[in-house]
Amino acid sequence: MLTLKEWMEIVDYKITEGSDYLWRCFGTNAYNLTSWSGEQDGYSFNIIFDTVTQEVYTVEACDYKNDRAYQLINLDYKDDYNREATSRGLFGNQAWDDVNFVELESDDDFFQKALAIKEGKDYDTRVSVPLELDDSELFELMKMAHERDLTLNDFVAEIITQFCEQVEE
Image 1 (cartoon, one colour):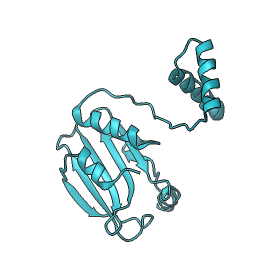
Image 2 (image 1 turned 180 degrees about the horizontal axis):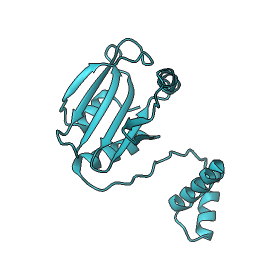
Image 3 (image 1 turned 135 degrees about the horizontal axis):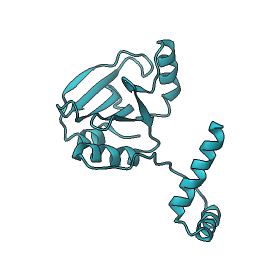
């Protein structure tokens, strides 16, 4: 999980707001920091962390210009967060109005999106999914991708997309 220091570097140590985090899913020492660009069509970045241990519970990147929001939750607390949201009659994935958080799977994906949002650059809106494959599995996928004249990344993305479509049906 991202560290407080890494988040502070993303926001160039510019903090615009801070407050106790009032939900109890992260414990009694949870604190929220925000770094807002100051523009309605700009961006903001949030972090919720423990003031005693410095453990990070969640980070968020909100891209108001493009109505997109991204969230990376510490997996050790994800179920607690979702339970509390449900108990409060809320959707844990709602960022604002009709915009839901896209849940990210990796620190690197958060870094890439956050830096691009901050710099006003275009970025990949897909979710990067880390895969751990042994050498034999990797080799087999590379052969299959080659047979279809695709890159390994494109082939794996196609497999994941098809799987998600089957699950939705």
